[in-house]
Image (cartoon, rainbow, N blue to C red; front, side, top):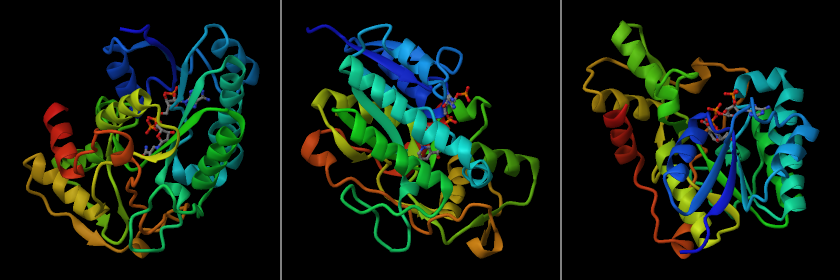
Length: 289
Ligand SMILES: NC(=O)c1ccc[n+]([C@@H]2O[C@H](COP(=O)([O-])OP(=O)(O)OC[C@H]3O[C@@H](n4cnc5c(N)ncnc54)[C@H](OP(=O)(O)O)[C@@H]3O)[C@@H](O)[C@H]2O)c1
């Protein structure tokens, strides 16, 4: 067997990052350096350069982001600093050490005003600050790192959310139902849920196949948030009403794409790895939590 790839993972204690860390650290194909904010604050260009050039990394995975979509509308500078400028600094370091640069991106780069899921060849047109900052990050990475992969995921749930760090939508639904709080969820916004456990395995498969460019990596299928919430409670064996409301009745600071479902039309050509349907992924998550 060839030498393991030396991988640096930024954002290793995030929801996605922690699943990448646990999968990659158990694989003989990788020698993982898991970096938290304490090891590298990506807003500090000198720190990024110092940490990422301290070893001859083959791959740098940037899973760090400022993900609070509504707060991004006010905190525009932070959104662009973390999601775009810092991504550029990471890409520069990758260029300098000859590393392959992986940037995790989002379905929110799309406008969401059509009924079909978006593929990798669809033109992005974000409608909020978060999406715009992520798309800018994508452009800066592609422009700067000679070899890169942009992996777009969406509506993430994973065990780091379950363990209390900020939570996730699934945990919120279960908590509210158990507390007997009224639950209202929008039924006219559609998306493709992504289980971070699966996305970590997809990334492994993509690295093995030498995939580059843009890839979509959500679980298969799509649903409304109301349908997703209903399936959460069903799988958790909780009988509890969820009121379906239109997005108009639930105004948020950031405008959301009405349909940001994503699908890959590249994966089948690149790898035998398949993202399972979101219902199966959710069942696996509920069982494992
Ligand atoms: N969550 C979603 O629904 C969703 C949807 C589509 C795409 N994505 C993308 O998926 C990726 C992972 O998201 P996630 O849900 O796993 O988010 P998360 O749980 O909030 O994790 C983000 C990670 O980034 C780290 N981080 C933030 N600012 C940093 C900085 N200045 N320097 C170093 N590390 C920093 C955080 O560290 P701390 O713990 O110290 O804050 C955390 O480890 C992101 O690129 C995100 O844009 C997420």
